[in-house]
Image 1 (cartoon, rainbow, N blue to C red):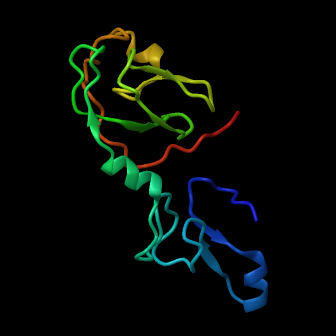
Image 2 (cartoon, rainbow, N blue to C red):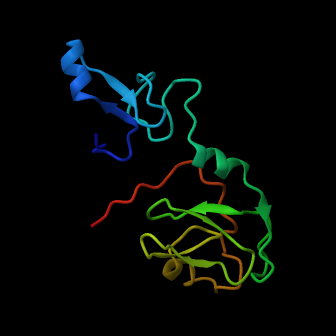
Length: 144
């Protein structure tokens, strides 16, 4: 089975729908019958439906970036703002990353694409807007 809308965890199973005579929806993440309102990209209404990546983003340690002036209390793990790939900062070098999946370069601190961030900052200085808050959703990559 393939999920057509990657931003929606609520999926209709056409086989179960045909067998049961009514629409059967389930959660792509926890694989249980869908509970709650749809569409949703983070979790369904089942109590044990947990997105491990979102949980990690909320609980990962905060770090300082010693080589980037003014950056303290930055989450150590971010998701690429373009494709959602999980990336951890080593605390070495500058604040910019090239995502190994989508190859977009972004700022680990403000989460903007590097070309936008560097209009008002440099790779070794804090961004004017400071450290972006912890991410609460997973970006969905719309390949072109």
